[in-house]
Length: 592
Image (cartoon, rainbow, N blue to C red; front, side, top):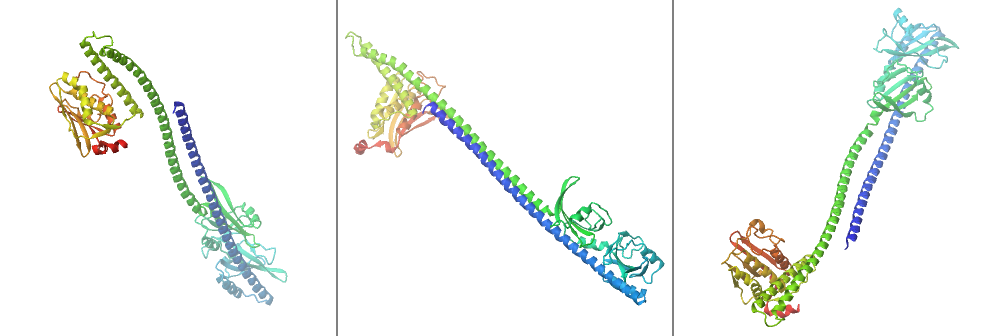
């Protein structure tokens, strides 16, 4: 794969990650929008249901109060008409009796708890009988004469007078009174008035029992805006005047529902209320029922707050999840970018290494070929027989050294091929003893020069192994070379091969300084010096054990190192049982 193809591939991958990130954000935003829309619609529906329910409650309460008021005033009207009939009958018979009229008034008064008193006035509005006092005293006459009544234009109509406050006549502790009166007619002429004093607190007491909420109110109004009675939660009191009420009175019959939701300003913002107005029959009265928004909207607001908390939780979870996914995608994008850069750098380094190896191959092979060529000329006496045998010996050493150096260069190049995965492996049946002998012969001169003796303990009955002989020989040469370099003069180097239940081991043991414990875990790394504190002649580049490890991995075995400081080092190569070739199975193995 070229660098350009890698770049295009990674750019596409990064673009895909960005597209996934944008899509994820879009999906989260869309889902959150849908949830918010669903919640808003649900809350709007709940609000509409709460308002409609409150309107029905207000309308029903207004009708209940209107019915009570109309029934109360209607009953009072009938009582007053009955009193007028009784009085006209006395006049007709010309036998007026205050005592009889008082007893009639007192009896009616007992059955009408909402009336404070009943009395009859003559045509000059002078009291002639009352349901509470008999006989009439001058003080009572003066008290009743102060009652504000007016003649009714229609003899059959109930007249509703003005509220008045009595500081003296408070038999039942009521502060305000409302006079109700009818004309008493006989043969078309006015003969007197029948009057009933209504207690507004009777209506207020009933209003307080209405279920209109803790902040709701029920009020009874006169058409001109005078408050006749109000519940305890009302902001208005009996006898308050509110002229703007006349517009509600006029609209009461025009509105089919008779209830509406109003929004009005308050000191700390806005408030809502449901207001229902209903006229009391054909009388100049109307009832008003008010439901406060803090009452009828409380369940809706509680639900809204709960949903709000849930939405906040959902939002936090979604934002957290989104940020987590976003960070993961961002990290994946960064990793992809880093991998792209690392791969490009690795490929560039690989190309540089290939160029270097190709160049070094030429640089090594050219002089080595020249060395080998000239030494071969001397060795084979191409120029004649007069060449001294000493030069022939030198030439032989030159040739062998050059050949070895060439083999080492080839091995290093082969190791590079192993790392790149293109190193060929030629497996064959390898004779262990012969390979060991060949490797010892290669280092024997170096061991002799250093005064070392190589002791070999290799049984003749060892089986062949399935391996590449060139790799095995190079491994043994490297191990023997290391042992020779690290051993002091006069010591022995032991080479041993043995078979056991785990396979076959070939070991090389020296009595050198050993390997420091801190370096043991790094054995096999390229360019690592086993003991850099020890001075050695002919120091290598530190590739010996690394090459051995690479070759053993390739052959299917393992490299084992055992060492203690000042006790020496034993390096072993182990081949597992499946790589051993018994003599009886040679043919079958070869066939495989």
